[in-house]
Length: 428
Ligand code: SDX
Image 1 (cartoon, rainbow, N blue to C red):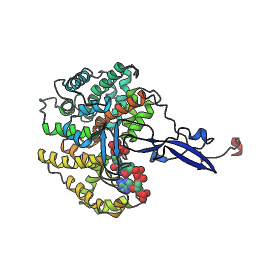
Image 2: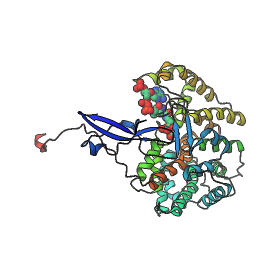
Image 3: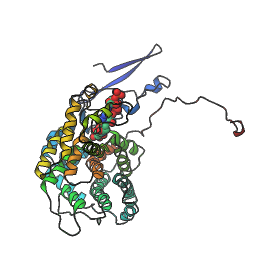
Image 4: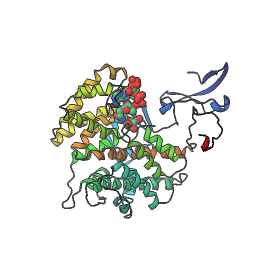
């Protein structure tokens, strides 16, 4: 592979360095393009062909359906690790030993209380508010109660900000759900594991002890691992570009939560369930929805299908599909929605439109079926995605700041009006 790429514009040739990643991916470094060519830029809506950064956190191979966190395969991590281990791995780059993991969890627990005044902000929301909008607001509000902006040059200050948000975020997640369901706002129990504590804060009834169900703990732990990072997806890119202006970690995360909410991104897991419910109401008429998804005049898309990077199976979808059968079986839940989902997947994988466009089930296609079987309300599905993605967002924000990345500021190709003189109102 040559270490140079040549661009010819109007007969002039320009050379740019070629960079090779550790997985032999190839990138043309166009940092010097505009200067060397007297103002020429590239344009790439949605950044489908454009790398925003170099990163050592997560590797995806969309053609082969590979996903690795810091070199470890998602299959092994989902099987053998727990969520807190994976969070540590993503953020600090190595799997923790027992002492490091125990200290990490203990430090997180020491920050697992949220200022009571945050409840006043939560009270101001109507019960009808979508939990993702509430979560984004409360996460941003944390800055008001923890004003120290992060000194990224101090390992200690960075570490403290990380364990602080990992301690407080699950409380906010639980509070968004309890607020909607008119339940008292609970704090966690430091005698519990990270995921056990999340479930207890979410589901504990004020009138009885909460009994842990290991099936739910294992299912949620696995789902959070599968959602923990995914390189430069929409919400992670939002976290990075927000942080690139040196805005604080908490507000950068709040921006990421807002981006994740969109139905084309994390909001898809809620949209998938709503779509499957609609198909069920329609007597299971999957063909009607397949036709809608292929109709260019119909804005409807088959939610949970397709992916910017995976042009093969999303490895997470494969794992979640197996887990859906296991969890529903273990819980003794019969959900016709699962059969409809499997039928829809089978049809789509045999349909030329989907085959031609390499559209496969993504992480959001089956996850909602498990969340629902666990008793998690559909409007909380994307909040659970955010809880899983939190360590990935933190890791990516930290990497961007520690690599001293420049402020993100893309250029544009102007296609508007050329100069025209001002026209007084009487002449318009
Ligand atoms: C996530 O990036 C990440 O890593 C995200 C994520 C993560 O972990 O962070 O993996 C999480 O966001 C998963 C994706 C969840 N979204 C959905 O399930 C929504 C439905 N999917 C689509 O909207 C779409 O597939 C996207 C948004 C996921 C990807 O869109 P792209 O890459 O911009 O692809 P595109 O819109 O250019 O589509 C290419 C073609 C088009 O048809 P043509 O114009 O070529 O004829 O495929 C069609 C699209 O119309 N198409 C679909 C489709 N997805 C793409 N047609 C019907 N149903 C779909 N779901």
